[in-house]
Image (cartoon, rainbow, N blue to C red; front, side, top):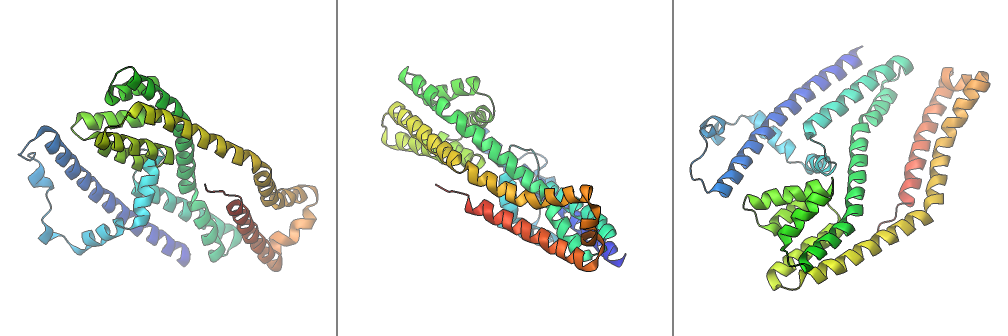
Length: 321
């Protein structure tokens, strides 16, 4: 019970800190929004609420300074960028609160079952990473969908440029023809340009939301064309061929490594299926693993080794190109 009470107090304190950090982030977002509106409409006068929202630097307490330093950690920034790239309207503090709730609940349940605080914390920490794993999966799926739409979008831009339209008009046609995620991301680019932001800067911000190498080639082509004045239609056409070649190569690599990846998944999950089968067919075979102290230790060690082996095989089969 003292361990559970300490865990609950720690979760409560961390939750309060994250809520305060979220309010700090909202204030900074309002300040950036007012700055963008000033640049867009050329206003010299601040909104009436500026005096209310303005923070005197001499009156900042130490807690705000600590929270600011915590938010400046690259890990939190990376999590926030990952959430944006996944297309989710979620703040990093909400993600951490959700993960912390799963960690606390899993720790309490596992401690009640196994009566081992360290093992319960390890299982709770593993389950607490599930929100991050889900966001990474959403991000990967969204980026893959964007990459699949990109060659067809480049063909449409090339046709618009060859017909005599400007690049902005070509982007408008592309936004009308394509659905999310490509249509929504380029719609944000057009809205930023309508507010007065240059197109290269808007495309740079698009790269932060969609960190695709193929899209980076398009951004470089637009910057070169704006500075040098070359034929953008020919560059976009050649870029479309390069993107299709890269995607074809990636598909070939995934096809060649499919058997090895499937073998790794089967080897990693086979002990769980065997343990479950023996528990149903002959419960006496697995009785020692669940009720004997030495068997429990062996089972815990086997779970850790199986997880490490699964992650090692997955890392070996990952090919970066």
